[in-house]
Amino acid sequence: MLTKATLTLRLALQTAILTGWTAGKLHLFKNDFTPGFDSVVGDFTEATFPGYAEIDDVSGPLSGTDAETGLLTVTWADGSSWLAGTIVADETIYGWYITNTAGSSCLAAGRFDTPVLINSTGDILSISPPKAQVLLDIVQ
Image 1 (cartoon, rainbow, N blue to C red):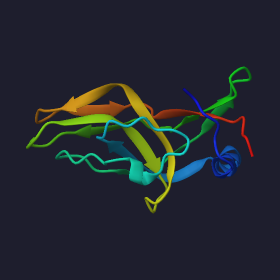
Image 2 (spheres, one colour):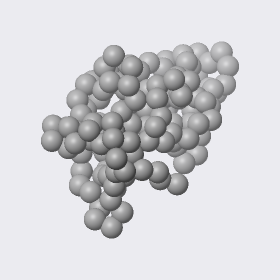
Image 3 (cartoon, rainbow, N blue to C red):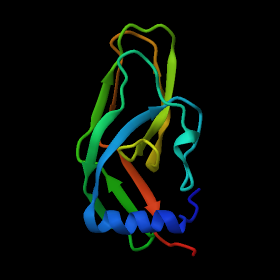
Image 4 (cartoon, rainbow, N blue to C red):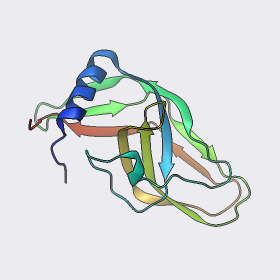
């Protein structure tokens, strides 16, 4: 269920609509968590499987707002993928999140429809392209 964004997110979105988001970092998370508008970096447990690393400089355009739902679709231009190295332990990946370059603020996040199990050397996890929807009807 969607909830209303905070004023802080509204200001971030207004800036993003005008300028686009640039130089974010794309991460995967392994805790069974459903992101919301008030998610913070500390809500996520970052993936640790061999071959995983955050992806720097994620950027791209924002698409339009749906007039009926008030949702703005945020899409990063390039898809991303990870190739698992030698697996020591199985790891379930539940979704992705994007932070600012410092890694201190969560800009967007998404949960996969079905979690992805990384359990074999050479497993590939791809996101093409990352996408999030945010509600622009703000309560101040």
